[in-house]
Length: 57
Image (cartoon, rainbow, N blue to C red):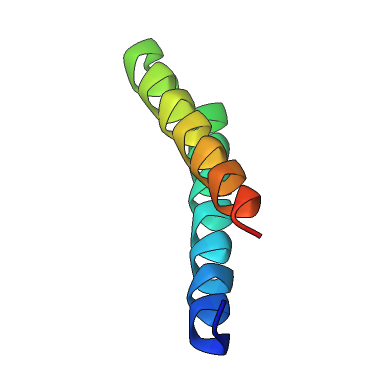
């Protein structure tokens, strides 16, 4: 992997982690069950994407 590709991967990992954290945080704060479920699902999707990116290393 080139240094540029590694930097891209590092940025992508950081963004996925941040999005997962934010969705989890927002899900814990909302009262609407549908919105809570949607945000929890998004958090899981970002966690899965993070894990997929890690597997490329």
